Image (cartoon, rainbow, N blue to C red; front, side):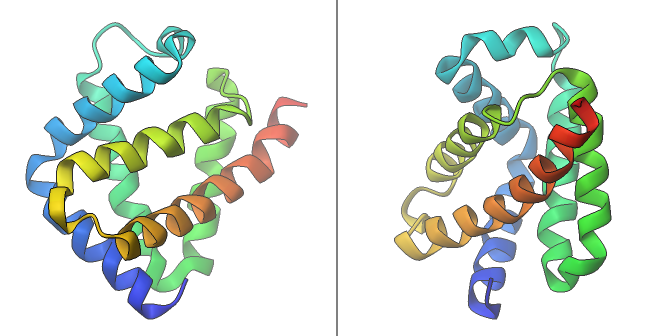
Length: 138
């Protein structure tokens, strides 16, 4: 990611942060609509999970400034997700739900450039998580 893309991701995440719980709720609604089987991986009450999602997204977004230092944190997250039953193919669904949520939450500010920057950001995160997911599961 280049500096412009990092700035786009960070500035649009800052726009979403004040409505973090609403955004996280939209994300999980979208995720479970896309793949209802994923609902089984989560507790009935998603309150804590919504907070964790937004905290981890925030850490990844902040970490774009020093990605090499962020990679171990993201890989550790991937290892934990292996224990939850997450499979490599789930990442495509999660990515689509994230992009859909950002589109809803940002409205007109969700430009093609913002979409591309977020897709690249998610690609970095998902790539690192996937890289350890198979090893942790196997």
